Length: 139
Image (cartoon, rainbow, N blue to C red; front, side, top):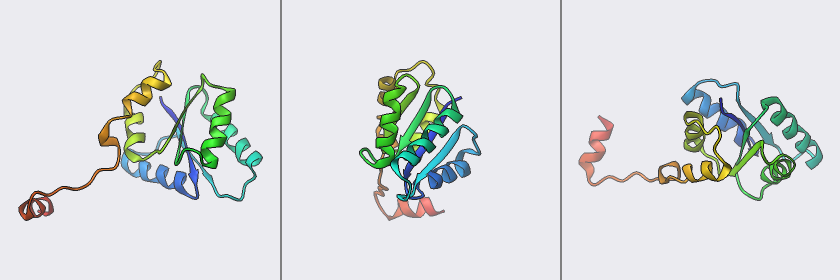
């Protein structure tokens, strides 16, 4: 089973895990680590290391933004264990669902990244050709 640690600023991670639990059900291999800005880097790094150890082998670490504290801490953790951690930034609900439903066992980080580059996993907009389309959607 895919093991995922979601981390980000504020309550981003716990909020996203809550969101995913409503959509896909509870999953003990999907955990959150919020960065509240009050933890020292050392303390936050230790918390992340504990979460990764708890999940075990081949862990996806998904962060809110590249270059932020959660990403940077995860990056340093990945540097010490590159074969066990797949690190991606810019996570959202569709991306996590994609990871949960696909079997990425044996796939390299690059292969996983390429699979996750599909346009439907990113921001989309609602397009209605005319008012009839809107009324059909509401009915």
